[in-house]
Amino acid sequence: MTVLLITGTACVLRRRRKAFPIFALLAVLYSYLYFVLQIEDYALLFGVLLPFALLATVMYLTRNMNWFEPLSKEES
Image 1: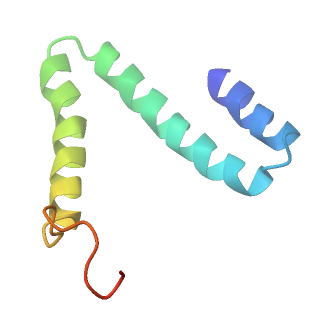
Image 2: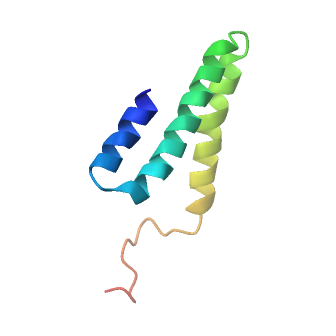
């Protein structure tokens, strides 16, 4: 119901194009959290897997970024 309320608000505000990705993301997130709460014995293991995967993805995507020179010479 929370996911429908949030995406319904986006639809009412005439942002229907952005409502479906928000709905999908929230539905996956709430489903994952429900799954982790249901498996009490392995909750710590599965609760750590998602943040680890997200952190690894961010690290991989930003591996070539030069953090010490925010603006390259071509952009300025």
